[in-house]
Image 1 (cartoon, helix red, strand yellow):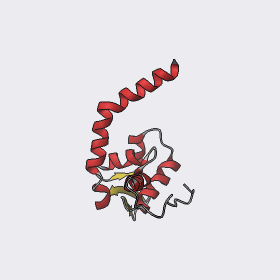
Image 2 (cartoon, rainbow, N blue to C red):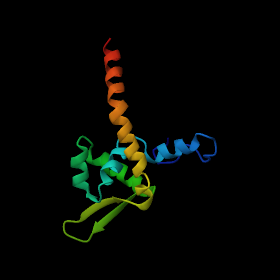
Image 3 (cartoon, rainbow, N blue to C red):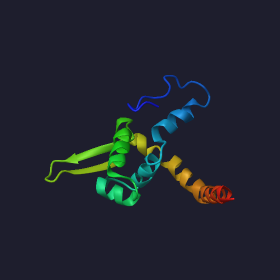
Length: 124
């Protein structure tokens, strides 16, 4: 994918393409985590960064901008000194709730075991 956030495709009509289009919107290391924490409601940038932990400020800003540009996250700026910025899911972003919760449930049941197994096999 281009660094200018251009989509890989201009046509999403093939059977698996809606899956690819969805992953293009929410995929990557940080977007799913951002969306997960915003399920609980509006958060300030610093609160979101603290919850995620190891993401850099630059990367978090970039991912939030991409989520905002795609219409999944709403950025609210308050006219205060210093400025206060909060993020929340849009209605479209909120529609991802069952998907994110299903990913969490699947991760609890399967992902950790699979990652441990893969790590063990790499050591051998």
